[in-house]
Amino acid sequence: MLLQTNIPFTKEKYNPIHYDSKVCLLGSCFSEHIGEKLTYYKFKTFQNPFGILFHPKSIENIILKAINQEVYTEEDIFYVNERWHCFGAHSELSHSNKEKILENLNASIQQTHTLLQEASHIIITLGTAWTYRHIETDTIVANCHKVPQKQFLKEILSVDEVSASIENCIALLKSVNPKITILFTVSPVRHIKDGFVENQRSKAHLLAGIHQHISKRDVVHYFPSYELMIDELRDYRFYTDDMLHPNTLAVNYIWEKFQHAWISHESEQTMEAIATIQKGLAHKPFNPNSEQHQKFLANLQTKIEQLQQKIPTLKF
Image 1: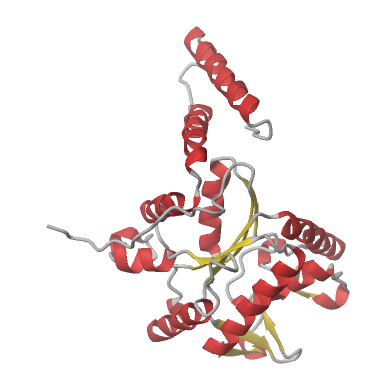
Image 2: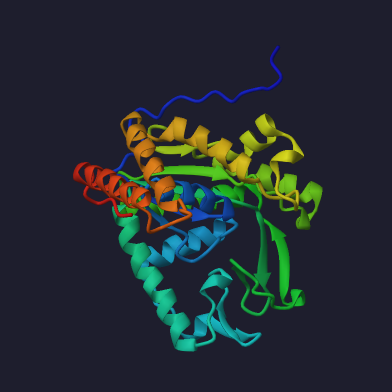
């Protein structure tokens, strides 16, 4: 008896992720879950240099700025609640010092500029089609930074607007890196602060907009994170206590599907060896000075050195 429907997956044949790949991840908080998994297994990753970005317009804006190497100035930041903020970045880049936030923003621009040219893969996770337009500047922001709600207009991007933004992202990326593999996904996180119906409208707009541009010929792909959560797991026990975010079990489940589809066969043995080392490094002994533990550490170091002989770029 089958008690679950399963989304079919096949291994990516032409450009899977391996240990020579450079993977850039942009987008919502779910992209960070995938990024953390890739980082744990020591793949070369570059993740959300401007913090979590939820909607396609904010991601498009960052890609455009990075490619053009635009410089952030005092006109791009503002002071509220005793910190300097930028409407184009997440609050994790905010700072109490004006010079420091500008330094961090411009360093991120330069780093992103370089890595977009070098990346073999970019994974873009879209969270919502809802946006907030700052009334005074008439611009769509990436983050409101707890500025009073009355200063913004809440708008939903239409399917055509989502599609146009995605098309712009693809064109921009291909203009500086023609061989880059682009992988879109929709975050399974539920944005019910927008409303239950509004959240589903938002996800529908994202899905419809993305799928106008999926093309194996153009190396633009889609990974069904959202569908795995909704159609395969489809139970509240796979959410955290807030009933909005996938819990660890759900993240691991989706990661296994991602690994099956996108990680090369050749890399899987290396991943197993790295997992063994990572577990060893995380081990907390009862007696760190014991002879048994010293032998354990020596054996662990030998495993690390053997692996580094095969892949010199690995660092633990």
